[in-house]
Image (tube, rainbow, N blue to C red; front, side, top):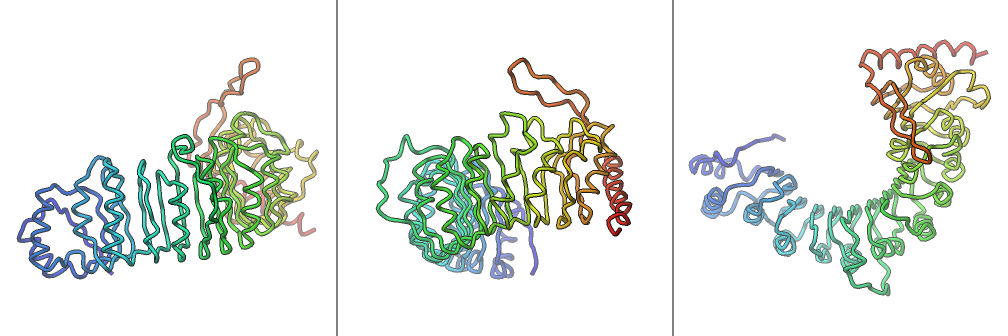
Amino acid sequence: AWKLMLDLEEMTQERWTFFLQNYSNRVRSLEVDFPLHLDSLALLKKLSETFGGRLGSGISTLDATHLEYRDNHSTPLIDLLLGPNLREIGLPNYANTLLVPILIAEIKRRAPHVIKLTVMSIDRSIDYSGFSRLRTLSHVGIISPSDYLALSNCQYLQILRVEEWADQSLTSTWLPITTIPIFPSLHELRVHVYSTQLEDLIFRSITPCLQTVAFRCFNRQLDVLAFSLFFHRCTFLNDLVIELNLPREELAKMGHGNVRRLRIDNWEYMSRDSQDDEFNWIGPSYPEVRELTLGCGAHYRKRSEWGILASLLPTCNKLEKLSLHLHISTFTLSDVTSFNTPPLLSLTTLRLQTLQIGTTFVDEFAQYLAMTFPNVSTFEVNKFYETLITIEPPEGGIQGNPQCRLFSEEEKELFIGNFHKYQKAEMPSRMD
């Protein structure tokens, strides 16, 4: 395998001739990240026709997703590169979205064996039903209920990523659901949902092989019961990402006995301070979870104290990897004894995406982590901040973000080193 980078605008007729005669039939993967001028396109088309259109004859992967948004000159280039050997295509984000359905129709006709497709269509509906061999689809923009139903004609579809950019409920005609979408081969579903129409269709879908679900809906509260029924039908589900706007009581209802990797980004937490028992429902709701990430919801909360760990860990006794954000406003080792939390012996990887803490607490907190996670061999701290001043909220208001400074790399490495030092110091007492 080899990689060739060309500045196509600098290619003279002589260079194009040499390239087409000697190298074009060796190209298997082509990435286009800058639009060609129309004059260059005309020359390329003329020379390609002269040499039998060999520029795109052997290409199996065409990636044009990085082309400039305002440019529509890429259409003739992509049209020139379409060929029967193409298997993977990534289309640009066109300013003129009328081009997208036209180009999709051309791909169906001239590249019928495509198995991977990436499309951005902000305000145009796309019918994918003709792609019978499609394995992976990434779609950003408008997708109507009829478009989603048509996807069930793609019987070999394994990975589906759909990101709505707007709620179509007010502009689209409501379709009574008489057909249940069935995806017999789908094992990964990632969706960002605005409209209740699409949400309803997804929750009614039959997906017997689904293993990974990433569901994002934070502009409103979703139908928790329908969601629960949907992924409880997914008996092979083991990887779950949920980014929602729900109270923890509702999240607890969506537990699943097979999930081993779980990420929770709950925007409902942004509106208030956390409580010590914030996540004690995770263990009972997801008893087999091995990898847990508490994402942006935890990151944006005004406070997330060490007591969360004390309530979370006893219920997740099989946890091996933990990633979260912590903002420690006060801490002493004497406080820990009141919780009497046993160490989590199964944990081997701990990632603190954000740790915000006062300097006076750093050493004791490293000691606490070493006591709580004695078998962690991989300990990472991404963003390490020192809390300087806590901004008090107005009466009845939400607590403001504390002012802070970023610890130096040397200070971060010292904190991580102290964690491992305290781990070793704890070994004799654990052996006794």
